[in-house]
Length: 375
Image 1 (cartoon, rainbow, N blue to C red):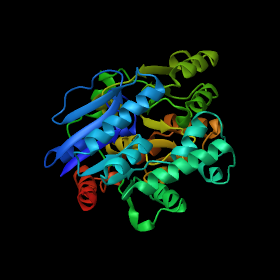
Image 2 (cartoon, rainbow, N blue to C red; image 1 turned 180 degrees about the vertical axis):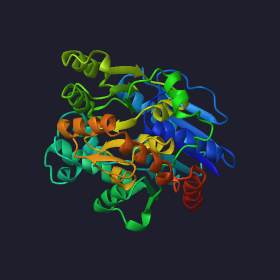
Image 3 (cartoon, helix red, strand yellow; image 1 turned 120 degrees about the vertical axis):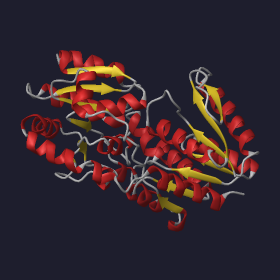
Image 4 (cartoon, rainbow, N blue to C red; image 1 turned 30 degrees about the vertical axis):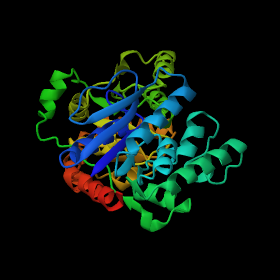
């Protein structure tokens, strides 16, 4: 089978697709011919399969046309397209050359675009009733794109239900959760705390710094409690500079540190070293960071939104709270510091809660789906 994988981001970029797409490509490359098309600031590092990229230095419209042409060119020589990003371009290329398309859907792209730009302020359920020329146009584009797909892969039942609500037949939508990483080679927690200088109680955020992650609420929560744990923010994205400015405005000093992007292996080490990881998102799907944190044995403090509650159980392997509530988040962080017995109990339950998310089996499910729909 010849597989074309399309991803809008790729390592060293930070974010779910930048983890998922290379992992799937590596799994498939053991038995199939794999080509990747992505966008990047510079040539991606070598892989045991072909990675073609369009430079992000090109003007936006030009970049879209060039990447569409690249996707169509590679799709013409493939048996199936697996798209984790650039959905509209993947759908157009699929139609142009007749190659079947399978989409990895992680949310409502129309809602996320408007919400990230500050043009809509409700949640994803409210967005279904939002009426404006731009919202209507983005919903039409979304529906045309996903309806072109022969199959849709969703990481959570929450996302599957969204897709079905858009009119996608239920038999075309499958749930394949994001897998847990293999963490067998990681050092022990105390050793990693010393290695990374996390001797004091520390919580970790790891991911893209975007409006979706609502890290402003995290900064507000820390500012409201002088006894809150230190916070390390790992990652990069468009919100980094505004967040650093806000941290200075709140006079957080060394209580919040921005460490920038780190290699995935180091992120797993930092997760294991932390008291807890934190995900204060305003909206979510089924985050890779949550599964990774639980796999290394670290509880999660997260917003009760999207598919998060499908993997985090409040009081069992983490703490759940309403989104955009700095007082609730401040209280949860306080518990991380003041209730060590609770944290140890959550930590003990964390790894077993993701035992069912073995990577080999889940990537095998995707492989089987691609084989079913390949031309």
